[in-house]
Amino acid sequence: MDPKRSKFIGSLLGAAIGDSLGARREGATDFSDIAELSPRYTDDTALMIGVAESLVEKGDFDYQHMAEQLIQNYEREPWRRYDTVTPRIFRMMRNGRIWEGMLDREIYPQGSPSNGAATRVAPIGLFFHNDPKMIRDISYNAAGITHSHPLALEGAAVQACAVALALLVDPQEIRRKEFLGAMRMFTQPGPYQEKLKAIIRLLDADTSKEEIVKILGNSPEALNSVPTALYCFLANPDFESAVIYAASLGGDADAIGAMTGAIAGACFGVEGIPTLWRDKVEQHAVLEGLATKLWEKTVVKTV
Image 1 (cartoon, helix red, strand yellow):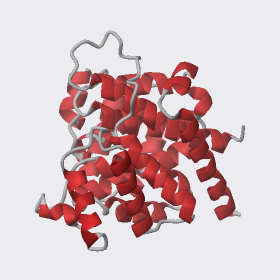
Image 2: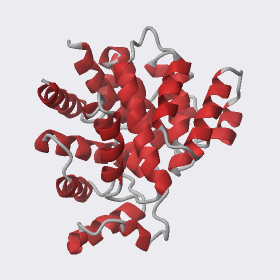
Image 3: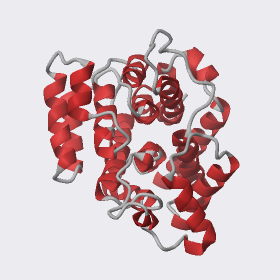
């Protein structure tokens, strides 16, 4: 298999696997079966699929098409553990307000700061992996469908950048500080830069999970989960240990697991994911087919 195609598949499958691992852990106190997948992924993967479907069909970012795809995926499966805000925004859009933007500000005055946009952004990082400016612009625009808070927008861009960089690195030669250096060059000055500096310090120390949660966070806010997922990837030597570590941090475990899985899958490829997980994760054939189409579109786009 083409190595880049393997990484595309690994990223989408990895996101669903991390999501499913985390979904089983949320609110749990017993982690004895931590490697067991939930039989269902959550809204994080459902909406990521919508992003990928739109990019495949349109061959580029199309705001209205992507918004419609996200809404359709929600309406088809509204039981996938959606938060209370996103369905309200989708209902506003269904009532004719799809082009208005910043609808989340009718719920949060400054917009939603949550990680919902970041958890679905992996296909954008894959599709535009050779163009950092496009990664930022498209991540912001796609996030803005449901999230307009500056930290949610930047969180989506940071996560997409991490996926793109992971796609381009050799999994046998990951230079963590170089990876973080590239992330810092991409990331805007402010809170995310501070979190990236903290990751550098934490990678050089023997730090407990409690300290990781205290410093990086594990809550649904993008600022307190996107950097955590990046740390989970960089602090572990392979896909399996990265997503298990992410799930074990508690808090918003499905979102952190999904983001970690998307980055780690983009790095290690589908061959780096345990076969049992690849075969067991829900809709694995659909995810693999969608990732392959996304890869094919990227090949055509860059020729």
